[in-house]
Length: 240
Image 1 (cartoon, rainbow, N blue to C red):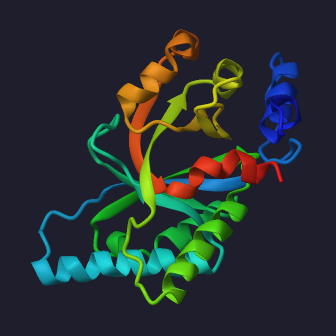
Image 2: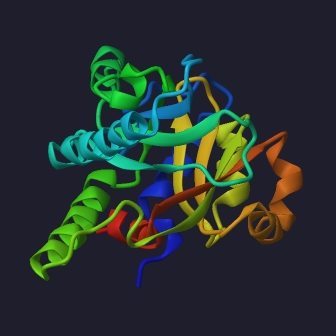
């Protein structure tokens, strides 16, 4: 049985706690830390609505492009935001398997929604001990199994609701959340913020789970999100 003290995320917390009096080390330099690019998909500058058929084709292209990027190993996580979120123009996320800003921008901007002005993107480099490449492999294996059964997976099949939490300080928030079974992913941002994926179906459920810790986290942002149902096993997958 895996214990918290042996988990990659605990090692990350311990190293950062020990060095909290000095500037945090660069992303990717801590034990087991992978650097990715988190892309916030927001409503874009387009002002003229597309015709229904054109809009449908754009979104089909959006899903097809995500599948292409995932099959190439470039897109390790994606999904739409839910109803409750800290900003009304948030649409969804990409997590790209690159730390290079130019590469991330080039990959994201292949999306037809961006090219049509439906979306705009905001980029944040994140470091995490979560094994998102293993997560992607599990998601693709499930999709392949569905296809092998003769069915065609639709967008959202096998998904479920989660909550993202943005905290002003990764060090403070990770210490407060280290013992929480609700935390599925912890990531530190290059600006010092913390990003956490919570096993909660909505914001009310997340707040109930985190009642003892919320006062320690500072001013946080909570966003409902829909992602792969296999993410509930991400901590175990990352510890292998």
